[in-house]
Image (cartoon, rainbow, N blue to C red; front, side):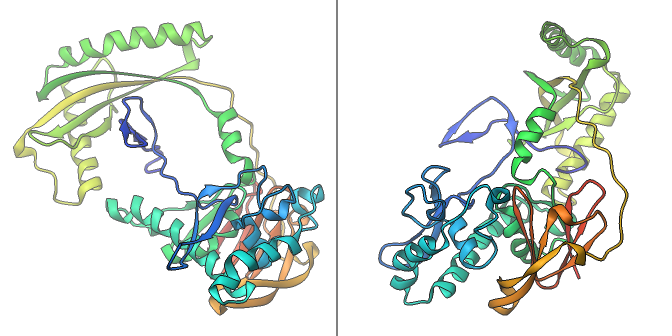
Length: 390
C-alpha cells in the first residue's frame, strides 16, 4: 500500500490465463501453517508447500488423521506453540505424534536430530516469504525499509520476526484480529463496482471528450448503487485514467485528483501526476514527456459506503509486562541457532503500553507471536502488537 492506495492488478493472471476483471494485487506462496514439509527426491532438500494439509486432516499434531508434517508441527517442535492452550485451550495438540512423524519423514533421512531439522525447515519457510516480499518490492524499485510490515494470519506472528529482520524493516504490526483479519476486512469493506472504457487520446486532450467517456459510466454506477440502497453521501466515485508514453506498452493507472467533469487544468494536473507515478515505479529520470503521452483507458471505481466498525483507542499503561508472564520454556532463537530459555506471556493479561523484550512468546486466544532476540514488542492503544528492533 503506497500513499494510502491499494495496488490493483488490472489484468491478473490465474493459472497462466489473463483475466480482464480487476482485483487487488495479491502474490501468494504455500508457506502457511498447514503447508506440508517434504524432502525433494534425490537431493533430499527440504521443501515447504505448496501442498497443504488444510484444516482436515490438518497438521499431524491435530490428531485428525494427518500423516504428513506441516509448518504447524515445526512450530510445536521448536517451542513456539504450547500444545495445552491451542485455540484458547479448547483443543489439545499431540506433540509426541508430531515429533514421531517429523523424525521419520524429515529428520532421520537427513541424518539430523529433530531439533536441527526443524530449525532448518523453519528457516526455509521464512526464506521463501522473504524472497517473495523482495520480488514485489526490491524488483519493482521499492525499498522494504520504507514500509511497515503488516503481519496477519494464524501463523504469521511466528515467522514475521525472522523475515522482517532479513528485510531490515523498521516496524512490524500484528493486528489484534490476526488470524481472522481477512474476515474482519470483509465485513468492514465497502461495496465496490468497477467500470472502464477503452479509447486512445493524445495529451493534451479536449476535456469534453474525456467527460463524454466518463458520463455513461457514472450513469451505470449510480443506478447500480441505488438498486443496492446507496444514495447521496453513501456514494463515492473515484476516477482514474491509464496513461503511457507513446509507443510503450506499460501503462500507469493514475488517479484523477481534479473535479469531474474535467477541465483543461485538471487534465494538465493528471499528466503531471502520471509522470510522478511513472518515475516512482520505473526510477527517477525515466519519464520522457518528449515522446508524447497517451490516455488509453478510463476507469471509475464506484463505492457504496458501508458503516465501518467503531474502533476506539484505550489508555496506555506502563511498560512493565511482568504481571502477564506465565513462565519460561526453551524456544528456537535464530540469532543463536539454538533453543533458549525465554519468557512466555499471556496476551489477555497484557495491558496496552506494555513492552516485551525478546526472545519471548506471546500467546493469544487466536494466534501466537514470537519476539526474536534483538526485538521488542509493544501493545498499542488498539491492542495491536508492534514489533521493533532494539
